[in-house]
Image (cartoon, each protein chain N blue to C red):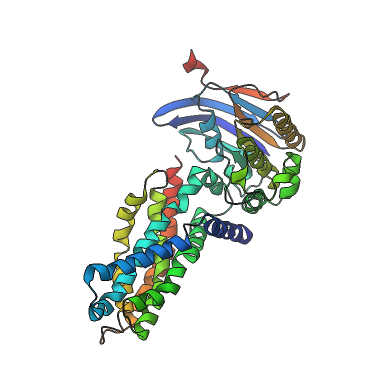
Length: 223
Length: 205
């Protein structure tokens, strides 16, 4: 079972690296979103520094949702999904492994690059560290929640928007506590640890729930 | 292993494709499912592998791996080849071998491709292959991971004459080794000694 899971992870990782459209495009999209905000709001550095963590979180949220819609669809189109369901690997585990690979390739680079983009918004050093930490801990929840939407829309040819409509409302708690943890530095009195721990809990909760929901949706989509 | 389907009925989109269908298949036996387009050949194969719920009846396997479902002991070769164009033939086969393997003796990707006359494409990305070559790589998957029951949906599609003969040889070897084959075709494929199951006869009249 371990070798099968490792083989699946390696395959997902290779495909994402070779086809492109994974890490690089997600990062560029993230950069564009972050760069657009100052144009819309104006070059007020104090304002940007105050809402910077929220901007970075929204940008990360949208970049994650943008990439996750192909999570199961490409396998559905070429028949791989049928075969994956006949493997002696629980479908829930397949969902977790695919999410893990997707997260490493497309969400982890966002967390790593976020301090760089935060600089463009005038965040100070402490805020940069908090944003990166909250993104690293919170983005797995976004990917897992996105996977539910991806599984529900797997057989729709143009399910991207529907996926966003299904999954984005579910990400609200993650967004609230993610931004709360990330902006602890700039908002002064708000503590960092409390929202950060709730964020960890939300990620663990989605790790416990989302694979089952997504697996049920995938099994149902086979009929 | 022995595959037994008793009194099964299959529905698709509210339409009953077949009902009261029973058959048994033992070691080294082949069953050819024939019928016109839309008769339910693919649906029957998908129902056996567990991808389509049965409306009635049951399908069971005896004497195989008791802990595995029928689908987990079966190779399903559908219309789609289930190959990733970005990966090489070797990577595709290694992946499916790791995922579908059941512990029996299987060929390495190179041996499996050699058997189908495609050793030279081992390290080529699959998207560079022709439709017939992709089909042969998909057939090589059956050899790269060992599973007793082969469910083949139009296995000879896109294959040239030589490749068709090669494919039938591979099927005969599998049967000789105690395997089971269920193949859906709209034209006879010339597998001697195989029993035939005709679907959709009544509706066609």
